[in-house]
Image (tube, rainbow, N blue to C red):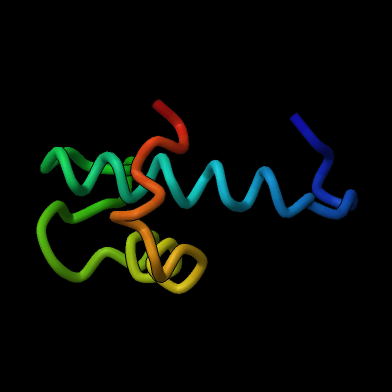
Length: 61
């Protein structure tokens, strides 16, 4: 876990985005504030980070 003032490395961003997309692919909520299907800001961010997500499905498994 990093402190708030430390930079976040690219691997951590990718892993977090992959976990988010995996949760949505499995029709689960990705975080406490997730509304579920449609309208999730975290999912939108994750799709921007991993535009080729289906091809990278094995990340985080």
